[in-house]
Amino acid sequence: MKFPISGLTTLFIVLLICICGCTQFSEEMNGEPQGRITGLTWYLVSVSENGSPGTIVNGTTITALFDGNGTLSGSAGCNQYTAPYTGLPEKLAVGQPSATKINCGSPDGIMIQESRYLSTVQQSSAYTLRDNTLEILDGQGETLLIYTAVSPELLSTWRIITFGTSGGEMWTPGTLTTITLRFHPDGNISGNAGCNDYLGTYRITGMNSLTIHPSGMTKMFCGIGGVMELEHAYSGYLPEMQTYSLSDGRLFMSDTTGNIRMLFDKKPS
Image (cartoon, rainbow, N blue to C red; front, side):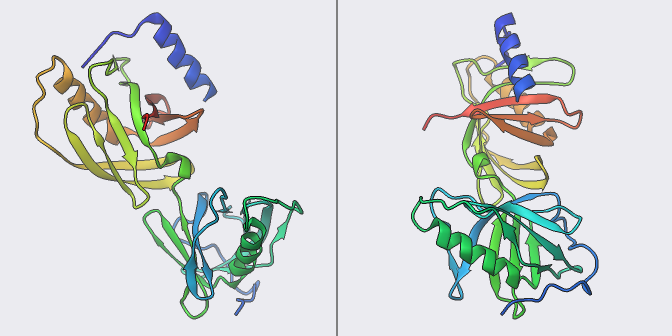
């Protein structure tokens, strides 16, 4: 449903927008790994442990960023690290990392995990890329590391506060209905558009950029005045979102103009 936004609410939104066996590293392997693994922050979800996938210690985040110029960097859970890398299409070699020297005492196992990760990443020989998932393989084709391009902060159920068009038309659900959007780790989205539930997919395409593809919706009719118009507007604008940012528990989404069009907060559980 369409509701007018007070001057105070508009000012609040404007303020929010303003703040918001080892593979040897060889120089003979020229070029960059292909397939859009560069320019993204990858978040580790699994590291091989005795040949089997190992889970990540709760409360830790391990990241990898391939900068496109031969430097891999990120957080190993406690320390920041950098390492040289090179590769050909479908190939990848990572040199010995250098890292800061902090000793983190908690959570339990963080330093053991960090040591295993920094050792394992040097065994990289190849990779596969599928949607939001990057797998690093050893020379025998066994999976060493699995990353996702999806920030853990994004994996939540978001409730829309307001959204608008490039022409300046603003919509807000008010208190009579709730519009939600949930990002799932497997690349699916779900939510409620104000009346009907919907499904779809999303893909992280670059640093803070994404594509969203709604694929289905239930067919209920809600008789509360304005709800169906609100749902129609939201369903039409959502696929236009191209970039996102996260700040203070809020999600901001922008269209191709770079202007913020949708503002969400986290839905109370």
